[in-house]
Every structure is written in C-alpha cells, then in structure tokens.
Image (cartoon, rainbow, N blue to C red; front, top):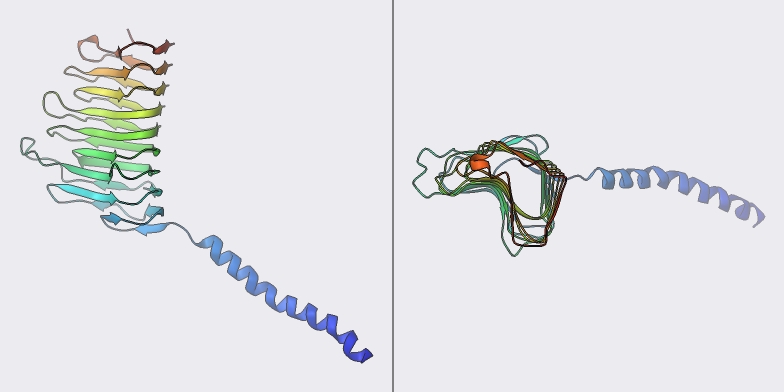
Length: 250
C-alpha cells in the first residue's frame, strides 16, 4: 500500500505533462480562429468579423456587392479594393452600391480599403456604425454618395462623387465625423445631421454649388478646414446652437 501511495503523485504528474500539450494546442487553435474570409460579392447574414482576401469586382449595372442583413458585423477590406462597373449611362436611374446595410441593422463597421466605380460607396442605414480608413472614388450618377452612416466616420478620403446637377455628396452622416478629407464632389463635400461632432475635417474644391461642410445645428463644429468650394459656400450652418470654433472657412 505504501508503494502504491508513493506512485500516485507520479502518475498525476505524468498525466498533467501528457495533457499540457493538448490543452496548449486547443488554446492556440482558439486564438488562431480569425475573421471569416470574403472572396466574392455576397450577402452577410450572420454577426461576426469578416475580411477581404482579394479585390472584388461587381459587374452588374444595379445592386450591391456586399449586403449586410445582420447586426454587429465588422468588415475589414484589409487594403483591398471593391470595384464597381462605373456608370456608362448616368441618366438610367440605376444604382450600384459597394457595401450596404438596412435601417433595421445596428453596429456595422467597414474599414481599411478602397472603393471605386459605384454610385454609392458605403450606405449603412442603421445606428452605431463605424466607417474608417476608406478611400472612395465616385462616378457620374443620378444621386451619388461616397459614405452614408450614423455613428463614427473617421479618417476617410472621398473624391469625385459627381452626380447629376443637384447630386453628388462626399459624406452624409450623423454622429462623430472627424479627420476626413473630401474633394472634387459636385453638390457638397460633407453633409452632417443635427447633434453631431464635426472635428478636424478638410473639404476643398467641391463645385456646383459645392458646399464645403454643411451642418444642421445644434452641433459641435471645430477645427475644420473648408476652402475653394463653389460659390464660396465653404461652411454652412443651418439653424441655431452650433459651436463654431477654430474653423478655417473664408
């Protein structure tokens, strides 16, 4: 009995040594489970993290490349580009969109990549969105937008959202709009809804009428630069109650 009792701790130790690599492997496998890979245009119907692993090309004359129907979806373009068909007939009324989520979604994030050749770049209809680090280049169309979102719109570059007369807006958003650069858009560079924080954006050389930054008050509008926009409409504040501080908008 004494011999068995002495061997028991040794057996436990050997068992722990045997199990340790297995447990380590399981933990490593769990850590290595990464975002779901996107290789083609599709509908995303489950919450989670997704990333592009190649450039995507959308060839249809209408519709959406990535349609999001679930809440709490994050899409990392990972430096890749979503390319649209352009718009050979801007009077057709057809709309193409690179990434879209409906009004019944929430918590959508799209970041880190390029979008070109679409009537609308990113259109996130729900609340709590994040659009960050995108480069959006537009085409002619009936009513073009680079980025539409409610939430945080940060560090994006939007160029050449042309539209027919009366259309073409670089960024249309409500929430925190910061660190964006927009230029060469037709109707306006940045259009912001009431109750927003608009800090550190630059909007230049937008045309016809080419409003640089248009904000519905009350909102906080600070440290923005809006110059060389059409008809000298560099900074337009609609209503009362905006904090208009340290903006360069002659």
